Image (cartoon, rainbow, N blue to C red; front, top):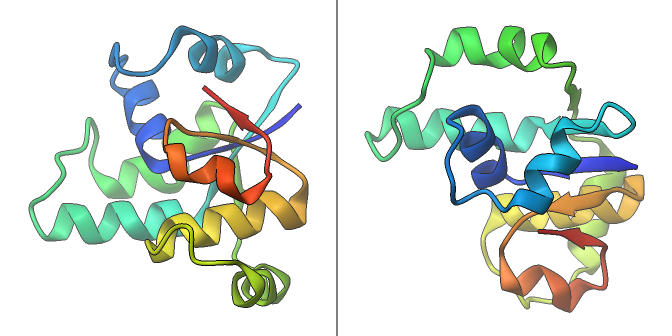
Length: 128
């Protein structure tokens, strides 16, 4: 299964935070699954860290891309097709980073790992 990790899922996985559901943790750790981290997630984390709203378990420069790659996760660049999909999405959700993850999940046919209840409205596969 191809998994796209929402920002909170990635951070909670890295911090071994119990807020990450056991189902999500097992799926991320399962070597049969392919985990992806969007460039949008890196962008969101960089912004939140620079504003002092987020403390990372490792320096940003270590986390992206080195720690992500060491974990075997793949980075997912933002492509024009993802942006075209955003333009077609209804506004069940207004957060621009989340809307990009939803679009990427749809276009790339990935399962989004997230606890966000709004994502179900988009008809994409969610794992939590």
